[in-house]
Amino acid sequence: MEVLAIAELEELAQARLGKSTFDYYASGADDEVSLRGNRAAFDRIALHYQVLVDVSHRSTQASVLGHPIALPVLVAPTAFHRLACESGELATARAASSAGTIMVLSSLSNTDVEDVAAATSSPLFFQLYVYKDRGVTAALVRRVEAAGCQALVLTVDAPLLGRRVRDVRNRFVLPPGLYVKNLLPAGYGEVEKQAAESGLAAYFASLIDSSLSWRDLEWLRSLTGLPIVVKGIVRPDDARRALEHGASAIVVSNHGGRQLDGSPATIDVLPRIADAVGHALEVWMDGGVRRGTDVLKALARGARVVLVGRPILWGLALEAEPGARSVLEAFKSELDLAMALAGCADLASITRDLTDP
Image 1 (cartoon, rainbow, N blue to C red):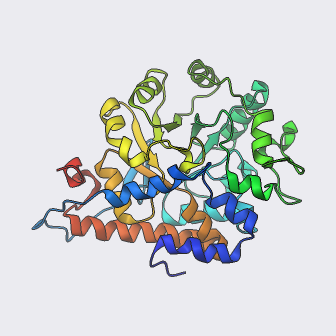
Image 2: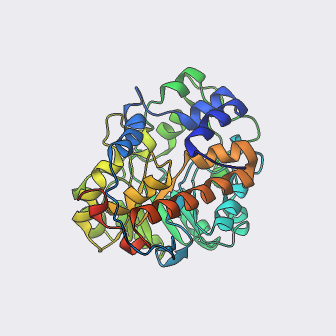
């Protein structure tokens, strides 16, 4: 699949997907101000490129939590990949491995973690929600560790699900035969089949622990030796708290504009957060990344890597594994070109003055 503009894939995928599925993937919370804001913020940032720099040899290679990757782009944790294609998360994992990067598997995967781990030769990270039943959460942590996952990515910005109006209108539910697969043994595998609003919102309200606090990061640390990444940070003080409580990395994220509408664009708050923690932990970022130039801007402002979610889903909807792989390959080729034109031969030469001279 030839990808000339990643943003154009959304319209093509919409023609392939049913309305409820497309709206579930594409929508943001309430008026979708934050959804649009993530993208608009990138467009406002200029690249102050350098000239007469030898860029005849370039490298997009990076590392994350000690794992080498071919490009500083990870696959973000997004739910229910089998809504996009039959092979679902297996296709995504294989695409990430083929592209030389890492997938973060969602807690809301339609596929067992063991099967996803077996489908990739790359490291696999696991995104975690904490359930009210802490025994269920502890068992899930042990399971994903036994499956070979190399890090836990704890989502902290979703004590309840944001009100996604499109899902409410569609009365979003999973179709028959699809489940939150890794929670089936605990009896938590079914999303509401008859919901007054969104079935997923009802699932969160009934099962996810809204009392989660910083002390629970220490509880999670007691369960596992895996690195813990805290996802959902938009404030420098919360970034410092994550560091104080033992996080190995943070994700500057507003959940793709799907939680609190009116939250700041992540690329805008990224520099202050990066400055607040320095090199004491890794700073990752997601939200609105659609071009290689966006990756360049995020790295210049302090991100070690970015995560992309929706573009991968559009690739899956269009061509399953090859489609998702093409999206990642497009990010790599666009980043390589952007680096050359900006006067950056490698990631270490991407510095703050590229966007804030």
